[in-house]
Amino acid sequence: MADGIFTGYDSEGRLLEIFLTDPTKPLYGRDINITIKDAEKVPSHQGELICVLRHFLKSVQKKPVSDKQVDAMSLAELVDEALKYKTD
Image (cartoon, rainbow, N blue to C red):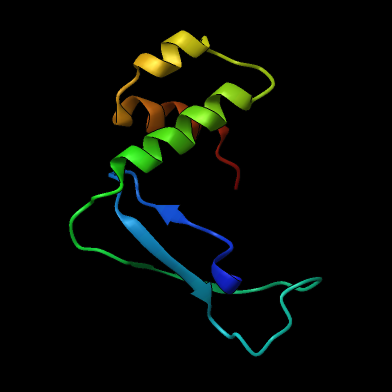
């Protein structure tokens, strides 16, 4: 996002472009609006997304599955498992 701080992917491993909708507003201490767009048409970052999701699932406090099970999961399974931690 700001200065390339955030990287995002869709559930298929497509890289997303995340940027401030109004970059003239101060970033910290305020509500901000962001815009998210596809950065590529064909998903080519599945490997990176798998690594991020495995790292996340292995680091959560109450693990529903073991690290070994996480390592064996497909991308779709990792996404489904990670969505259990979604907040509104």
